[in-house]
Amino acid sequence: MPNLDYAPLDEALALIANYGPELDNGNFNHAPMVCEALCALGRPEAVMRWLGRYEARMMPRPRGVEAIGEEDWTAALGRRERFSDWDSYLSLDMHFRFEWWQHALDCWAARLAPGFSAAATHGAIRVGHAARALTESPTERREMELAAALASWAASYAELPLPEHMRRGHLSPSRAIREVPLVPPEQRLPGNITTALGRLTEFAEFAPVIDLVEIDDRPDTLLAELSETFARVFLANARDIRTFIVFAHGVTAVHALGNIIPHVEEPTARLLARHAWQSGCALYACFGGGTALAEHIEPVDADRDALIDLAVANGDEHVIKFTEACLFRHQIAPSPVYPAAIRHAIGIFGRR
Image (cartoon, rainbow, N blue to C red):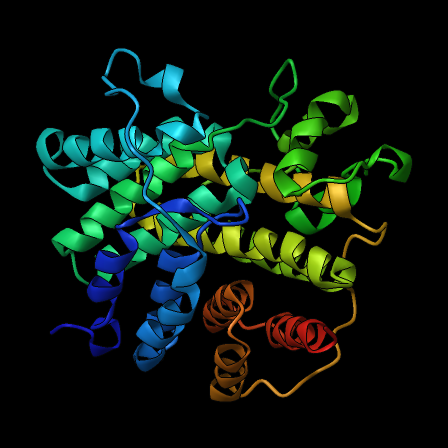
């Protein structure tokens, strides 16, 4: 039986398909992610109303440049102007080369995993929302959105520095995050998240952090640990709107990982987890304030409907997505950190 909470999603995706992956200010277009998140939160009536307000900020879908083929796709990675080329290529790949969408997702998630941090992790996050929507009901429109989501990841693809030799990690995420070196304040230049992450190539101390955590065969346990760790990083380091946006992505990116890995093979899941960890560490290295984790969490009102109402009323794309991610992870592995993080986020936006 169809999930009625998802009834507006295909209508919203049909409208969104006319637009590209960027907004008029150059930032990432959050529309497909927020519309899916509102459905997951049980607020279908808010989808088209929210989209109607957001649409004015969305840029038209760009023209294609040149067709991408199986022999030359690597040359088009990280080329934002090639989004439409990527979308066309991946749509064909999904429809004609694979029997099920999960096969396409496994193939391309493995190929794109080293670029998990691309566009401040937005490509991977969009893929996570698209995969969950297909799980609810595999419609043609949602399959097209998965292709577009993968295209946005491929077009913005960028890797973080890696160590010369790979080592097996042995620490839990909550212990390992304390070992992540921070970029000194005098080396932090103005710019957005993507610019800051790109400068990590000049910070040699960062490369080994990818191998700090043990990536074992317990994906559910690891996901819970990663999610709570980055929620505690958020509480310790989100001080204003800029740092809220930065550290919210540590949580929403792990949430995306949780939506992807049920549909991919174990080697792909492990590769994604490794680079999701690395991406969260990169955010902390570039923007962290010196305290890795919030240790003691003061209990707050954790009424789910009240928190959802606050997020929907706020209307900010990051607040809605962050609230949905925290509530989803809280439902799976309850922790006081999640309602506290939501309240903290909404408090920051209330101070504007």
